Amino acid sequence: MYYCYNERFFLFFESFFIVFLLKLSYLCRRKFWDTLVILFLVRVKDLVLIL
Image (cartoon, rainbow, N blue to C red; front, side, top):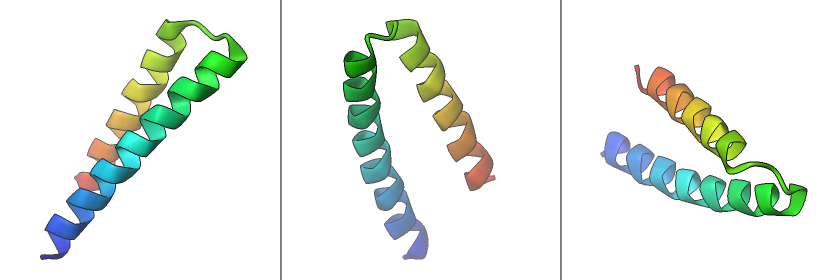
């Protein structure tokens, strides 16, 4: 039960964070590659938290 709730929370947070990063990268005129690197780091952090 707690795991399902935690998983849904992470999915919601991750989608919100991706949208936020895309808007931020658009505002800052950053390269798309930088955003991909940030997303990769976030994914690694999530995996570490799960483990």
